[in-house]
Image (cartoon, rainbow, N blue to C red; front, side, top):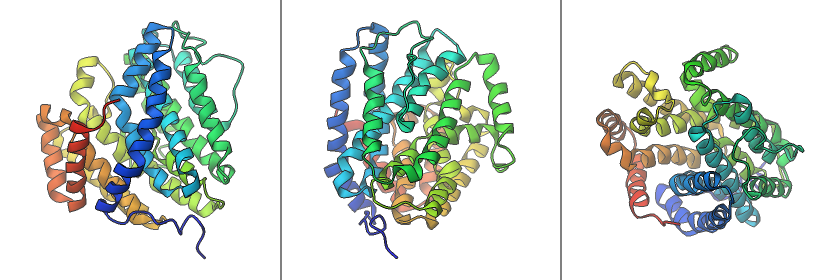
Amino acid sequence: MQTGYTRIRAPKGPFSLMIKVYKQVLPAVYRQLSYWKRRAEQIPNAELRKQALASIESKKFHCEGGAIYALLAHPAKFDKVIEFIVAYQTISDYLDNLCDRSSQVDADNFRQLHLAMYDAISGNKGDESYYQYQIERDDGGYLDELVRVCQRVLQELPSIEGYQFSMLTLCQLYCDLQVYKHIEQDKREETLIEWYSQHQETFPQLNWYEFAAATGSTLAIFYYAAISSHSFSSEVLDAQILESYFPYVQGIHILFDYLIDQEEDKREGDLNFCFYYSSRAEQLHRLEWFLKRALDSVEKLPHAQFHKMLIEGIVGIYAADKKVKKQHDVQYIVKNLLKKNSKSIRFFYWNGWLIHRYGRRL
């Protein structure tokens, strides 16, 4: 029996997908980001303002990509789902910037800041400030407003209760990662390995750094938001999404994010999970393995072809990033992946090349 969700006409080919992205998704994303940029410009504290603006300017492609899931939303809720995705991803990018550049290497501070991401989905809000342990605190209500927007939108989605538990499960993993990867450098690896040991029985096929990478994506949360906009929920679909997206789809997403950031992370002293592969040959092998598992795992989902295109789009668009040209080993991996895989990936590569170089600047 078809539901309203399965009757959604998702794009079936790369060309039709990109038309919808350019005509529907990106304009809606830029409207939302323009608002949040204006709000960020009003932040009283100079350091918080700097990090908020930097996160929007340098990481807006996270919103551009994540918002594609709104094409699976109920048409009447398309703009609402975009609003949630942009606000939630903006929280994620802003807090990541704060933690990366913080002079306070304090696990309590990182966890308190990331309560904002949990509250944004749970609908709760405690009395304590997210900046309780942060030296810089006066953001003029910026983070609180981002949280409230997410909460308001989710409350308007008819099936949110059916998928909220899985969203919070993924969110908790994401928040744990953000704490562990930002603590003192000499404690990060040991803490992350210990964390993985608690999950190793469930995910024995992964290395500890691959598990950590898979927790660092918000894609499944955006997918859950989109399907929550329909008046239908399914425990079977809920389980299928979790199994497909975690660890494989989210893993390929974040491993590519780290792949292209290696030179920058070495320079800044930031943790990068791609550093732990023993050679570029092993790195290429594992990325190919993740890609195949991700593509195979979404076969069981409604609109399987749509999900496959998103996975191929992740590979293509990251491969087209300007950072790739500056890193010989990364170029080698990208060229091999493009050569060995489908024409769709190459199509998305050229679209990514255009977006990275000529996309709208806010």
